[in-house]
Amino acid sequence: MNRIIRASAPAKVNLVFEVGPLATDGYHPVNSLFLALNLREELTLVAGNPGTGVSIYVHGDTLPEAHINAVPTDHQNLVYKTAVLFSQRLDMPKPDLQIDIHKRIPVAGGMAGGSADAAAMLVAINEFMHLEHGTPKLSLEELAVIGAELGSDVPFCLYGGMAIGTGRGQIIEPLEPLQMETHWLLCASGKGLSTPTVFHEFDELGKHGTFSDLGSFAQVSSIAELGSRMTNDLEPAAFSLMPALSEVVTHLEELGAVRAMVSGSGPTIAALFESEAKAEAVAKVLTAEGLFALTTTGMAQGSTLDS
Ligand code: C5P
Image 1 (cartoon, rainbow, N blue to C red):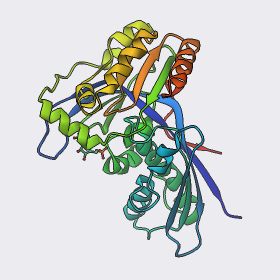
Image 2: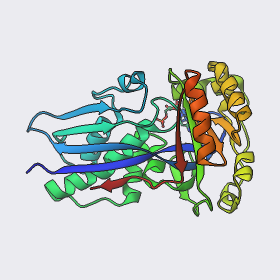
Image 3: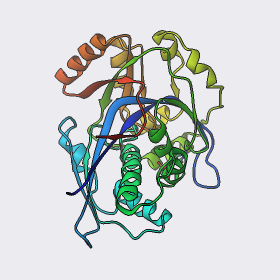
Image 4: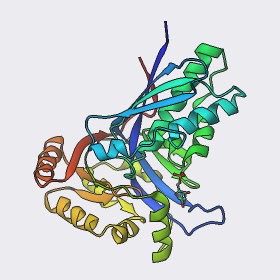
């Protein structure tokens, strides 16, 4: 019987995103506080017929159709790149795989949707290669090294929880769990923002921040304190490229969010609430206004193999 491997990985929000000036390697050094959210990409992998290569099918029933349609299903998909890179690292030929991606994370939204797909694929293909071809299973740390080559957020999507990310965001230092559950409303835009474009706009604006000590976040004991410490150095760049975003932030705070902020490079707005009921009530208001909003919670586990 054809073996089915299932894996999932979480969305992220950057509670703090401090960004330094462009470095010679083309990346910006960052000091980031990541939190994983219970909004997970689910990936299913089965062996394909010999010689068919990697085929990818993307679907989802909770996101606007434009988001699903924006995901490439060919060699440009990060999951495809993950399959190729993982096989190379194990000195194996490119595998024949059929992969199904159930998308729940807004696409090109600053929530690590593509990175979560890659992180889920890394644990899935690690298991698949071991069971089918007897290759040694790589550790989480080894998977994170491969993940870092695929995208700066992939290692965090593997680890999950709450963590500090440095370097270009790929060097992960897990922190003690937050002492409380957090409730979030995510307001996704109809159009995505390209990460390099937002970083470029950040350079144009010429206002890079300084790096603070993020280790103390694990001791934060109230939602109000957490909200007051949220910052994102990329927010002015995202506002400059999509001015309507700042109105959404103001609107969400007027509607009762403890704090609303662009997530990562945007354009998704992540709004923190005191309770699930309040987040859901505001999501209803936004939906009635024609915006796309969903609610979720944090923290969440990193990539898992699911039965
Ligand atoms: O690592 P990832 O593939 O997600 O990065 C996409 C692009 O975003 C990079 O090519 C770079 O232009 C920009 N980036 C950056 N500094 C970072 C992370 C990403 O300039 N720390």
